[in-house]
Amino acid sequence: MLRVVVLGAAAGGGVPQWNCGCAVCRTARSDHPELQSTQASIAVSGDGAHWFLVNASPDLRQQVTATPQLHPKPGALRHSPIAGVILTNSEIDAVTGLLSMREGSPFNIYAHERVLAILRSNSIFNVLSEKNVARLPIAVDQPFEPALPDGSPSGLEVLPFEVPGKGAWYLEGKAHPAGADGVGDTLGLRIADKRSGKYFYFLAACARVTDDLKSRLKGAPLVFFDGTVWRDDELIAAGLGNKTGQGMGHIAMSGDQGAIASLAGLDIGRKVFLHINNSNPALLGTSAERKAAEQAGWQIPSDGTEIVL
Image 1: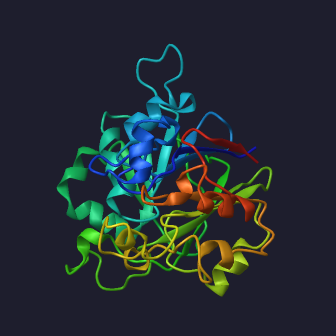
Image 2: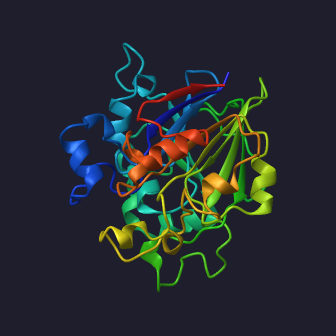
Image 3: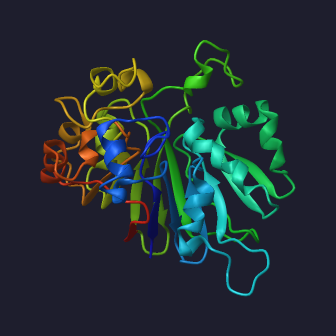
């Protein structure tokens, strides 16, 4: 049995964002606190006892506290069900939460060499001693089985694959610690339970839907997909920023080339948007954008949503 918990559904900054007075953030602070959401991450387990995080958001401590599945077992002074963290990119909202896991519990970090190079280049991540926290490289289109803390197999199979995107924004105009080749900066994951054969896809960032991606996702029982913005120029039109979705490496939900249209007709069982920016009107339950997304078969999840395959 494959279990997935949405730890956070929001893009960088969360909902509400600390310095934002947009309609969504105002509503989340006042009339509809249920709109409040932490930054995007999920936890996945094949046995219900050991969990692997996909990305470690800056809100990780809050997310763990709010998720009983991730609490220490009763009677244990030091224990965590978290066996590992799988990183799909090196953005701040994907790696910063690692610093909240510095108290000595063993777990593994799985990431592409380009992401590991960034962790090595920033000495603050050395608080995670490699005696307890191994940093294990993963490669595009090479499946791996993450291990449990005692080294035994987890029963999960993870296949990383390349997704159109871009490198971390804080490296724009700077040399990447791993060199100029950008393959591996943005990954999607296919995560499967080897015992049951159940599987799902996770893509927190995606700049466009290619034919290769369509062929991968066709017929999938569950897909978590980049839902950062409703329209490409959303931040500019709202007066909230000067970058487009494409400029940030994210596809829009709407439009002829958007996620909703591009992934229609692929017989995907359950489609869930994740990494949703506070500017996105689809977050508002009464909005026309929300109705359009739901009519197209997409779900806007809340933190804590659990899905069992």
